[in-house]
Image 1 (cartoon, rainbow, N blue to C red):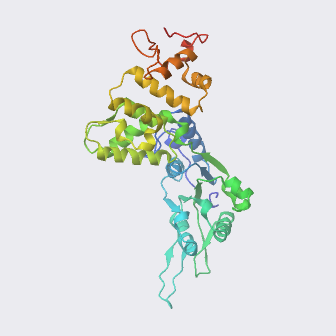
Image 2 (tube, one colour; image 1 turned 120 degrees about the horizontal axis):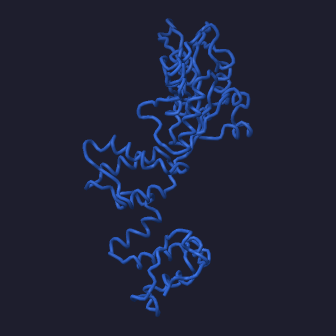
Image 3 (cartoon, rainbow, N blue to C red; image 1 turned 90 degrees about the vertical axis):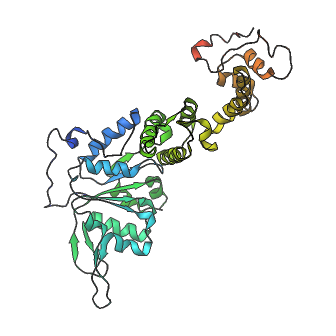
Length: 359
C-alpha cells in the first residue's frame, strides 16, 4: 500500500539509522551469521520505500520482529506500529476489527476505530495473512487499491495512510496458484518480499541467541552451557526455530541445579543421537574406545548396515571400523594396548589414501 497522496512524510536525514541501515529494535534481530547480515541489509533497503511488504518464513523465525525493524528504520518510525494476527480473529468479526464500527444510537452500539485507522501515519502489520477468509481477502484488496475504509454500519469513507506489511508461514505464491488465495491480492501484497531464514540455516547464531535468552531468564544467576549441550543444540534441526530455542532455554534455566546447563538438562528430542551416544557412556564412565565403538555401531545402523558407507561418514578406514565393531565382543584384536585408538572424528585431510592406521 503506497503512501496516500497529500500526506507527505519527512525524508530520513543523512546519517540517520534509516539512511545508514544501522540500528536495531531493542530485543530484536540477533545473530551475526552471513544469513542475518544479508537479512539486515535487505531490511534497510526495504524500509526506505513505501511499498507493501510480504514477509515469508517458518513459524518461530521472528517475522514480527522483522516487521518492527522495517517500521523502525522507515520514515514512518514516529508513527504507530499496529499488529494484527489474522488467524486469531473470527471471520465474522474481522471486518469490524480492521475497519471499525459506526455509532448506532438506536441499538446502543458504541462506535470504535478499526486497526487501519489506528495505524494512520504508521505501519499496519497483518500476521498470518494466508489464513484470511475469501471475503476478507476481497475487502483487504479493496482497501489496498483505494486507501479508504468504511466502518461497519456506516456510509462515510475515511481516508487512511498506513503502510501494509504482511507475513505468512506458508508459500503465498503456491496458495495463489492453487486458487486458495486470491491471485490479484497476492500480486498487490508482494510488492517487496523478505524471506526470514530458519534457524537450521544459521546454526552459527545459536550461541549468540542462547546468551541473549540466558541474560533474559537467569534472574541474577550466572549460567552457561557445557560444551556437550552447546554441540547438541547446534546439531538439532529446530522445527520450531528461534521460538523453540527460547522456550528451551527458559525451561533449562528454571530447572538448572548448578551453574552449568548440561546435556542431561536438555529435552530428549533435542539431545537426539548426540545424547543416545554420549549419555550412556558418561553414566558408565566408559573409555574413549568404548564410546567410539558405540558411535560406530550407531552410524552403521543409520547406514543400514553398509560398512563402506559408514566408513565414508566416519572418515575412517574399513579395517579401523572393523576394530571398533569387534570391541567388547571377545574377538581377537578387540582390546589391549596394541589396539587402535584412532579418533573417529579426525579431519578429512588426515585420511590419506584410505590406508589403515590400526596396529
